[in-house]
Length: 158
Image 1 (cartoon, rainbow, N blue to C red):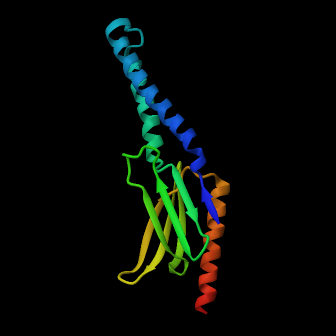
Image 2 (tube, rainbow, N blue to C red):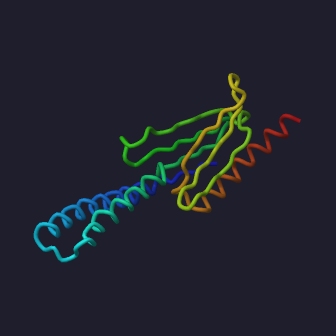
Image 3 (cartoon, rainbow, N blue to C red):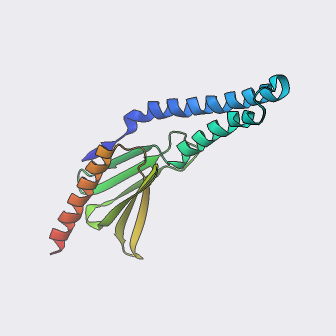
């Protein structure tokens, strides 16, 4: 099964550009308000605070693009940001038989996928992926596919 939200990258780029424009517009509006008009008073700080908080929320949600491929004998995960210099892209590929378990965690706007794989050196390794920008249907499809792999691994061991 293949799962990807790469086609939504232009939407995320648009949102990112819009938020940056709001931020710079807020700074210009704040400067003009403070030195020219002085109408808003203390409320003029909202011209900076609101765009900054929206921008921080957008980036805290994590990497926007998530790709998953379970075709063949290996599982392949990719997780990257639309702004290339913000975070290092994650790319992991491992055989299906190494998958031990997985867990999804949701806290308000942030969703994470924790995948535990078996490792020769340390016994197990936990890989972390940010899936905040996946729809609920995509998350359910991902869970279904990973459960299928885990079930096949348990049958293979017994």
